[in-house]
Image (spheres, rainbow, N blue to C red):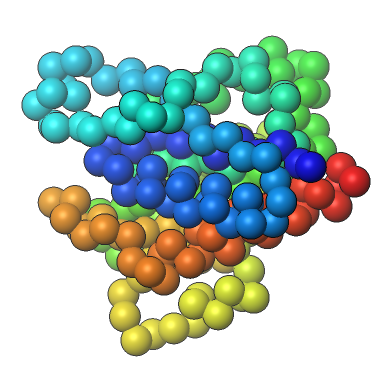
Length: 199
């Protein structure tokens, strides 16, 4: 059984909901899944003023434990077209893992949330994927086997580079059924890939 970590940062819960859907897909594929979040690095005053809401049911991740997993799916909201500083700060601490090659050959994937349809989803996914590639991980995307990729009947997230959702400028839009279905698909694909590589 593959061990999978769904690692995320979420200010208002949107990325966290994708994390839950990804975990569902990975569990459906038979994986042992943990969902963890990275620590908040914004000053308390900013967190309070902006109204950040963290899911305390998901424990905080520690850098050293990344090597314990067969696959890691990394999720972060977009900040100016790249991953949030909270997630970047976490990965900036992985130099020791990189030096040991501790993540080489493990499976990696990305997911994100943006305020608008063209708010930088794909560049944010690439900013995550870049870190995973430097660690020597094998990247899994959200392929066109997920038929929701080509649906034009409604605004939705997701791209070949990873799962995503659109939160709206005020954060009022929640992940749609199609967004969540893409996340479930990605979680299942990562779990199946990890099982093949570690089996």
